[in-house]
Image (cartoon, rainbow, N blue to C red; front, top):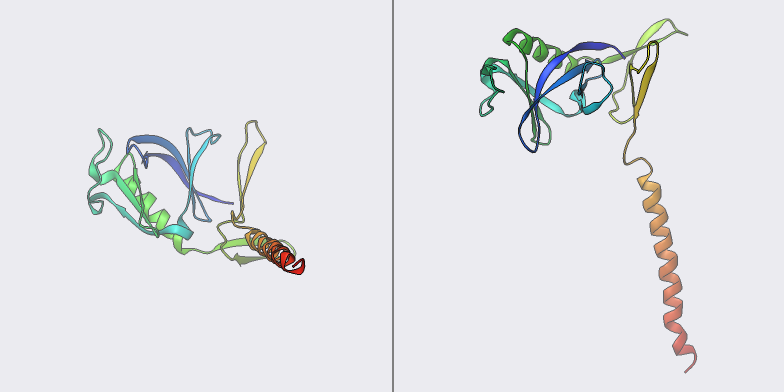
Length: 185
């Protein structure tokens, strides 16, 4: 997976609304990853821009958001999501916040291509936010960490069907026990 942009961004936490400095990576598949440091070892948050983000605003467009201390309002970046929530970010300069905005907007629009060595061609990959593989640098030189994100509802239909079948079998067994006293009368 190709890395489009990376750097330090301030991120406002959801609960306490305090500002935290995070290293951010924006991948070509639309994943915006937040790490504790630039070593990329401790992933704090991953946001899929292609799946969830509907708008990116910067600077004076970000009404009602106060930037961290010693940063002007022009450095703000606000991501608006489909569920109505927002993610407040702040860059170190106005130019940097505009660069992040443009890259995030391009990431949302552009398809992801995968190289097929057998046909010597690139093919568009259909987007699936749950079956995605991310490769990040590992602990030592030449090592990599592979993170596979899977669908949390994978296999739910089979579990529901099995539960319904068990419920029907239990109901049939209980029904036969209810008629048993009438047979002894």
